[in-house]
Length: 491
Image (cartoon, rainbow, N blue to C red; front, side, top):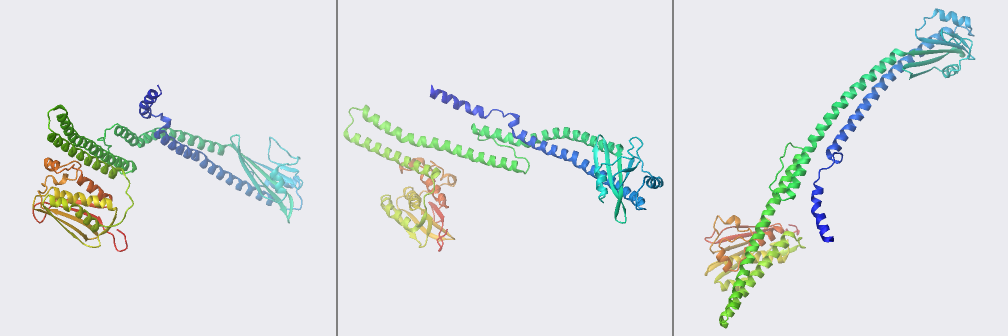
């Protein structure tokens, strides 16, 4: 039961991951929220900063005006050593009254000597007002505030005579008209903000949807590729990061498609190659088992054939393992290796094979052809190239092996006088399991993997292998090139 439930849970996981995300968790929602926060912030600033600026300008203007008027009145009153109610009234009768401004004049003790208000006249009272107290201490003060839909401004200045404070002048202004102007500005800003906010909501939705459209398409494409549709591509528009991401995705799917096709072809070819010797072994064993009268000589012949097919299976398995290590395994620790010495070892080992095939094997090795690699890998490259040149040669043929240093490259050149490679087959000879002459290759014991292994190994160490016709005549020419080491020991 536990295994069944786990399998069912695993089967359901892709469907859960592909379920549509809630809008509030989507990138579109995050984009929209970000834009809305920016818009709201701008609107808040627009509804506060201009009002504060206008309010400060109005307050500053009114305070300056009232303070100037208080100083003028104070200067007009400073004509004698004392202030009396009669002298103050006489002076104020001469001065022009400012409409909407209340004027209070006190003596040095704060007693109100003059009050221009007709509704709340406080003549004879003491002015316990902070501005009056400050003015009696010899300071010019002013203060403004917005309260109850009106601007209220206060200013006070001392009345000085020969450096002595005789009293104080206090002005109070109540302005409802300027307050209405401020309210009108605030109302207009709110209306404009509402219109902008409504337009921003629509614009934010459209912009967030447009910005996340490419993301949605890319996510959908990834899901389709995950299901195996490696041929699916994303249309790239524009030149921004999303367009670059779409290009990278298309290149990745190209690589995946190529890799998948190569994998399927490799599995198919490997299965075919393994099936052929297995079928031969099965046929030979059935022939022995089903025939009661087979003689011992025939049995030995069949067993010998079975051994050859088993050897072939072994070679194919070893080559497959080598390819697996090249495809997935890390590069082993490399060290300076003299290419000429490795080639001489290979030539010495294959000399009996060349004699058995009636092929002359000649080597010419130049000194100072060192490179960074592993000796085993170089041995495998040289062995595959030279062995092929011997196997696919003709009796009385020749194989010339040259190791040289040219243009910063250490190269191994193998030329043979064999049957050669047709021009139409030349681009495919490094493909895995590809054979030019399948019948001849099987007869020679080939698996179709040697050249592929040799090239992959060379590329693993920064080199490559090129193939072409033998310039000296019929046959083929293979050249493996590697970055050579300099005298300082660097490639």
